[in-house]
Image (cartoon, rainbow, N blue to C red; front, top):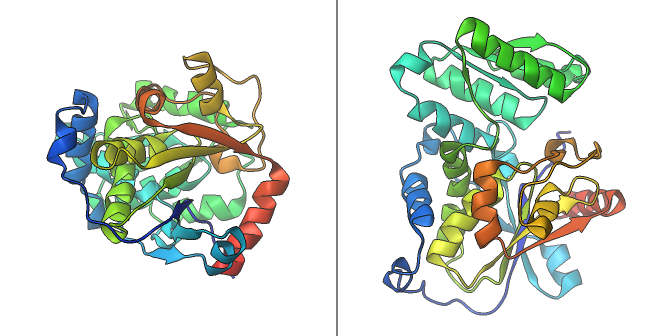
Amino acid sequence: MRRKALSFVWSSFGTQSRLPDLARFVSDATPMLEQYVKKILTSRVYDVAIETPLQSARQLSERLGNQVLLKREDLQPVFSFKIRGAYNKLAQLPAEQTARGVVTASAGNHAQGLALAARELGIKATIVMPRTTPEIKVEGVRSRGATVVLHGDSFPEALAYSLKLVDEQGFVYIHPYDDPDTIAGQGTVAMEILRQQPGQLDAIFVPVGGGGLIAGIAAYVKYLRPEIKVIGVEPDDSNCLQAAMAAGERVVLSQVGLFADGVAVAQIGHHTFEVCRHYVDEVITVSTDEICAAIKDIYDDT
């Protein structure tokens, strides 16, 4: 049975209400927000991604006394939202760059998302993965048409080698989260949320690794519905966004936990932090035990 992994959970309260007059917010929006919203609205994610359902979590809602909704990004072709950003980034590349081929370093969802996106667009993709990567993940990337290079025993070593390939073979490096086109692709999640649930929403809770998903969501939501809170959720041993928000600048964590390996990032992205520092309302952390309990809760509700 395939494990179910949801991108995020958020709570919705109250009765249905009409979307606010967008013109009220345009004059207050920063040029950065306007730019991201335009990118989100013109993203080419639906060449390969699907609009995922917004599903009520009945048991969680009853237990918490609130309406809790789940955005089912686990139903994407690669079982995560990463396909959105990867495809949108590749679709924006000029022909001269796509002809050179692309490379990235990843042992997780970005690797599979980029592999599928590259196959659909006819672009040669090379994915550098640590030698310690589980075989099931390696095969998941190979099965989607990418060339896999196993190098090093850690992600930093794999990353360094991928950048070496950029210099030696002329590949275009595709960052897993810290790129405006990637952020915009992930931001289409928020576009769907507001369309699927046009009534009152109190908060959107977003998992945070490097910040691509929460930056895209925050940019779109705060432009159109600034009253909705955007709250990041991080493991307490990989809280790079929370640490950066507290310091007022990007910081590098001395170490990160690996239980939630998909969000085990030591430093929040540059582009992502520029959005998050202004438009993310709060960041909360959860323990490994709480993550395990949440996995069971969500599995039971889906």
